[in-house]
Length: 117
Length: 107
Image 1: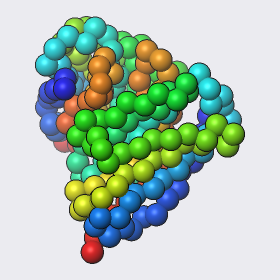
Image 2: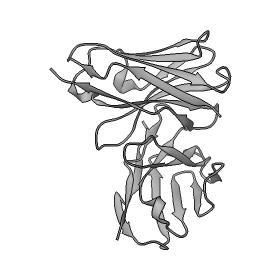
Image 3: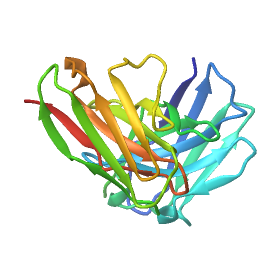
Image 4: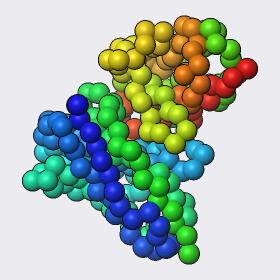
């Protein structure tokens, strides 16, 4: 049974860079796709982007230019960086697994990131 | 972007009720749709994938139907643990997009 465990700074100031990491335990890392999703407090879900096991990435155009998803296959980890954050980036961020042709099947526990001066 | 219009945004129901939630896509997405349940403070949990396939371990009172642009999640007999918020997700084309959510509350 795969488990995703995530961590990162929970409080940022405007203009700083958000950085979160997600470790994958108990399952294969290759052969799957790795996503980040966010949810502002009391609101709906937004897909941030996807990293494929072959290294290619797809990002939400609403965040293009600020977002980077990277991978460390030696550690079975992948990371999210979001630059120049503002209060609008305050949200719970989730790392999530998907499979080719299918949607999001396994979720991390979520990390609340608050952007405040 | 494909817009997912989910309705209703909330509903009140009693234990034992049949509940239906709908998602409409702004363009055809074949059966590239999933349904998720989220409880307060928790990560979403997948209930249905490929529009109508039941996720392993999910009770059979949950079912999904539809293809193209119209999709439905049905709970045949609402149980106390089913009071939650439900989302649909299309993964037909990037960026993947979610419905706005339906909060199922106690009547």
